[in-house]
Length: 431
Image 1 (cartoon, one colour):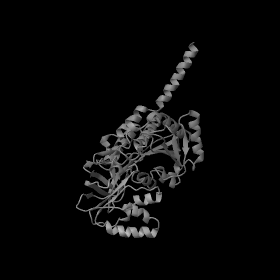
Image 2: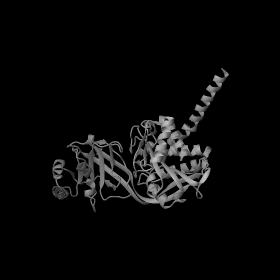
Image 3: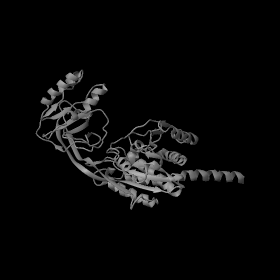
Image 4: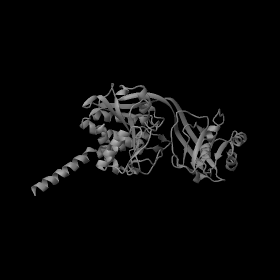
């Protein structure tokens, strides 16, 4: 009886210890803080991105990370077109930014004027797409018809991808020296997915849910307020922990910036990428209490959403020789996991991918560890282009609120976060 009790308590102790490896409370605390309204979407208004960077610096310090200089910040600048506000009324109804409409990120400031509205003849346009010559002639004709007018692009009914792509790029056709205060209004059935631009165009575009389109509709009011900042100041947050062996370096990275705020609409960026940053901080907390095998550098990048700018700046201004990096693991979109994880560069570094699969199978962590080839879609890319062995790992599943205001903590599935954490931890320990 005593033996059975001892074994039972021993097993319970093991389970409790394993459960405590992942500090769920700390993970949630970081996630909630980064997505709070005070950080305004970690973007370009209300100093949101830099406030988030300051917060992470404090967390690095609390967890005992060392810095390569006086502090953890690596500052850099880049141009960014800041959409400060955008309003739109159709048939007297005020539309909500982010869910009813968005604007093209390169748009310049524009407001309602006395200019007439010109609606594109999509039937004629589709017929013109039968040949390059017909398309060219149509554009010449259309250019005369729409000159000095606001343009309305009705919903496009076609299954031809090349036509859809061309239609979506309509504003680019007329991107020239535009003296008029005019705009393009494009109605679409596509999901509204916001983004950023480093430049400002000479023409503005509203992208609107097609449920608001009708032939007799009235544009009652519209405006866009933008500011092109040629030298926005941002900062990467970088620290490290010594390992048992400091000859080689393991890098764990994640970007902490997001799209920010437009008017009163905040883009919280819970999955992309507060979740990845929270996972990064959870690994920092673990390794601050459990000395890693190798010197481990933790990098929280800014400017990813504007073009992977923080990571690109780092590889061109490294704080140590990039050749020292044994492996880099980049974490982006850690807010799901019910369908497993995806490993970018898995086909490139097949042996490491196989190790990851074995660890997952042995411990029955996740449903699947899917493999991809190379893709320049996150902060691993500039390192990989410099010859650094690297993975970009993201979770699969969830509700898929990508780059819209519904990417909130309450819309994440965090049930798999402990398993994702343990898989990452075991893989990093195996490097």
